Amino acid sequence: MNRSNRSVNFDTGDQQMGRAILVSIFWLATTVTGCTGIPEGLEPVNDFAPDRYMGKWYEIARLDHSFERNLNNVSATYTRKANGDIRVKNRGFNTKTSAWKEIEGNARFLVNETVGSLKVSFFGPFYGGYHIIALDRQNYRYAMVTGPNRSYLWILARHETLEESIYAELISQASAWGFDTTQLIRVEQNLPDDCYSKNKRG
Image (cartoon, rainbow, N blue to C red; front, side, top):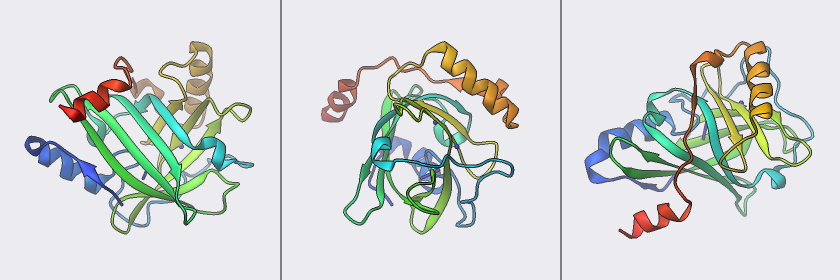
């Protein structure tokens, strides 16, 4: 779940929220180029296999931020670009406006491709840190991601749900690392994938 130039689809009536997301970064928010580091005392995963990480991930839990407020059914899809960068497409369903929100970003590795530490941008030259601090190394079924400080935390999975035993282990580890896990939001994943495409077609 340890943030991420863009094409954007926002409803006209929701432009204010759209601007906020563009500036703050929908998934890994930051508005300054220097916020790409990892929180003190934490390390990104090594022996990272980026091609195995590509594809769709579902957000299982997150710490609250304004750019994701009222969103459920949140997911992120990662695909390789010809230049080696990674295209990031995030989307979620706003329960207040009953509308889907989508944004595209670009990610680059900070060290090299074997280290799960990237910088992600949804807004011009402004990048934020995206650090994978826990990962199912065997099957790449779940991951825990942080941003530049401990107020950012996401738990991600390949499926809409995650086994409670695994979730509990990740929560325990995050707590030991200094995250306020009592503030985590469990994200609902209660809409089918084809609901989004139907919504876009009207």
